[in-house]
Image (cartoon, rainbow, N blue to C red; front, top):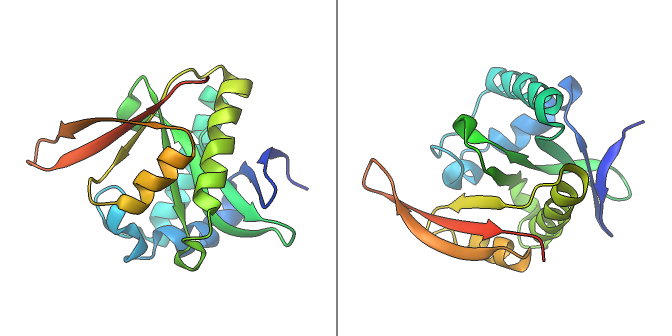
Amino acid sequence: MHDYIFDTPRLRARRIGPADVDALHAVYGDADAMRWVGDGVAITLQQCRQWVEVTQRNYAARGYGMFAVEQKPAGDIIGFCGLVHPGGQAEAEIKYAYLRETWGQGFATEAAAALLHHGHAAHGIRHVIATVAPANAASHRVLLKAGMQIGALRSNDDGSFTQLFAWTPA
């Protein structure tokens, strides 16, 4: 039995554990899906195992991190979302990725909105950012529908740009 972090009409989210490595790899090992995530490279099964370990340390340190997103009623994992602090940044940052076959069905928006509410209600988080490739229009729509506001365009060291989004509770 799992302790669920948040629940929506179609989804529920829970903490990630070692048994979720294959599901994590199904999402983050998909090279096409990962073109918008991090450095755009799919990750290996071993990197997924390491990610589970890092996530469990985040739970211990902060009480939150990345979560498995299950579709109701069957409980199949369709993706992952969470609040993280990449590189130790002070601001919580929302991250998410889903199986490609679930894209376009509103799951990312539904989970992101619930996650923002959970972060505020359970952990007192009052400011969350998101960083998105300027060309990733689908993620822009997800974040705006979830209640985030578009922010500045940030230049990166490599000459590329990142679109910032921000959320504060109403």
